[in-house]
Length: 146
Image (cartoon, rainbow, N blue to C red; front, side):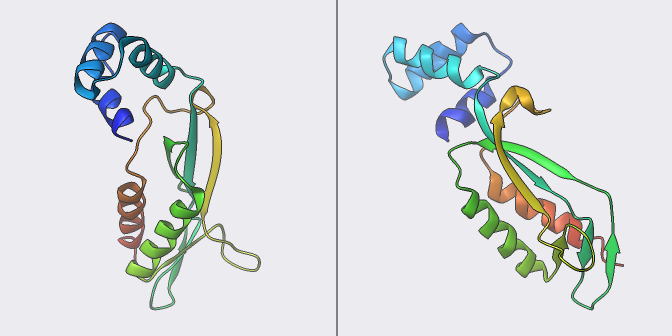
C-alpha cells in the first residue's frame, strides 16, 4: 500500500522521475524499482472495483428512501473482499441504517465488488484507503434521512 500511495502522489510526473524518487525512498535496486513503477502505472494493473448502490436506504425510525445513485472507486487488488464487506456492515451499524439493492423481497446489501484491469474501469488512480472511503460514503448516505 505504501508503494501505491507513493506513486499516486507523483502520478503527474515522468516515469523516470517517479523511479528515481521511488528508488531513493524505498532503497530498492533500480531494475526492480523500474519494474514496480511501470507495472503499477500500467492500465492492465489488476484492481478491486467497489460499487455501493444505495437504491433503498432504511433509516433507524423505519423510514426509507429509494434512489438511483451509485458510488464507485477502485482499490489495490490485494485488498480482501471480506474485509471490505465487514467495513461496510460496520459502517451501516454505526449509522443505524441499511443500504440495500432494492426495497422488498430478496433485497441484499447494496455493495458489489469485482476484480478487473484498471483499463476496464472509468478510473485513472488506484486508491488504498477503502475504509475511509466506505465510512465517508455511508455517512453521506445516512445524512439523507428525511
